[in-house]
Image (cartoon, rainbow, N blue to C red; front, side, top):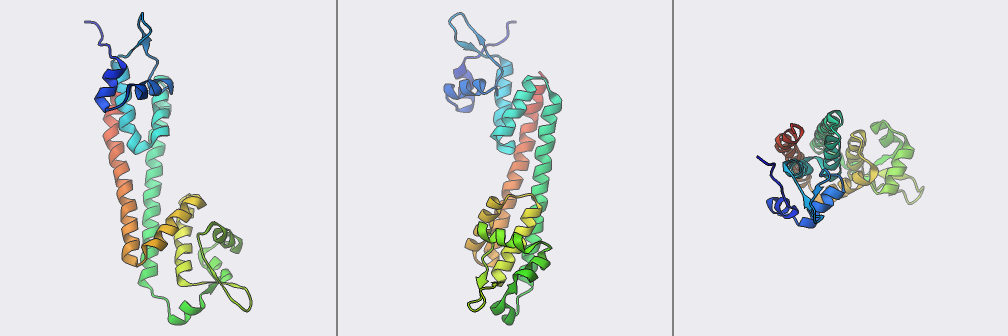
Length: 233
């Protein structure tokens, strides 16, 4: 029995794509090169159909770039590279989940221990906060430039002092920094915390983060059979 042949539109219809998108995926190396008929039109095979299914299944959990790289490695029959991408993505996601747990614990500690009224008005100095976080004061000034922490200034001396909200932001930023997050992403997250307001809203932000992580984990699990089916070819 002759192998089944597919037109670009056949692959496109299965996934609700345009034929141009299918051709673009081939041009990007996500699909292996297609055979050409006498008229020059592309002719795809079951291999291409499985490659497209695998890529579209991988993309929600691994992201476009990683999914594309995995398919290119599979075309080269470099299974070692494919599995490295899989392992790295799972390791990164576990690292993010642990970072989330650390941030949640830091917030729980801060909300469980109310700050005395006198400390709330005075705040802490840059040296005291740096010592508390185990970092250099220069790093706190860098975080200030990035918008992560917002100290107040003593009108008489010009010295920085950090109110409880700034201490909270610094505590959370420290955990995220340990988790390997770059400063721009930390700034966005801290801004989100500020916009959330009270502690209940802060925990809602963390639950949304946890939901996104869970969705990626589930997407990776769902993609596994599609990737295995393509590698079996």
